[in-house]
Image 1 (tube, rainbow, N blue to C red):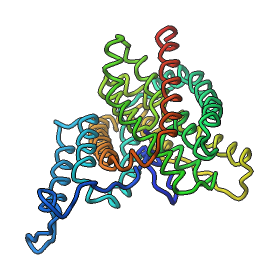
Image 2 (cartoon, helix red, strand yellow; image 1 turned 90 degrees about the horizontal axis):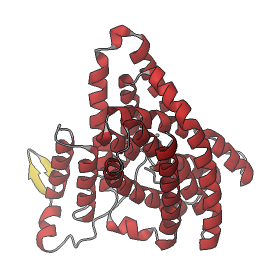
Image 3 (cartoon, rainbow, N blue to C red; image 1 turned 45 degrees about the horizontal axis):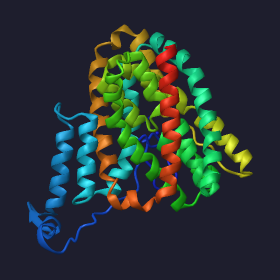
Length: 356
């Protein structure tokens, strides 16, 4: 649990949740004035409108993500392909849309969930949530000092890993009064690992013969952003999706106490704690689906729209992760992020396989 909080700095989907969650704006690293890439960036006119082939390619990918043939992993892969080659021609627009799109998608998923099952999933996940959050924050502090990273970057990456990726970073950053470059480093680290998790987790789950319940719980704990949590769980099965979304959103509520604790520990006065209100929209949708029979026919429609929205969200996120963005983070933040991620992933996997 992305799952989305809007600072005045680059952010992710899961922005607030996400993601929402928007990545740092990326630009193509290819020479735009020579050869093939010159044609992609050369302005053309049709029906009185200026456009480039680069924009046409983006729109074609976007339209494909709206079709039944697209899936969250495919959408993310298309976005990454775009980012590594011709670049995202609509960085401003996709950054603005990502957070809101993820929020609406998460609320839509609530129309396909049962409140009684969600409560049971929440009960199972609460102990994992508390232990993993505080364990990750403590480990991050120790490893970050060992690596010699700045305390703001360490805390942002640790919170992003422990709670809900870009949404947590977006909420904690203003409380810390973090600099733009500190936010960018933390967000870049989290989003790269999110992309890896979305592709890696479903095959691992199948290889270990994990149940739907086990896999959903593992995703919610071990994957950073709500967007990638929901994407990976959706690829595994409907029950996994229900468990993962419920536990991740319950986990995201820890943004509030962790933000307050951050303000106290770092002695920041006069800061505002941002609340992920869209989570309450998800709860309301789930209650409507459970207790209002007349709303049942609405459920499948809303869930289908939500899944399309999630697919497009991941396409936007991938389109912002160019090689330039990845390299700009530096090696040490990745070392911290990977160590924290490996510990929480393997530790939670072991416990889940032996207790759930």
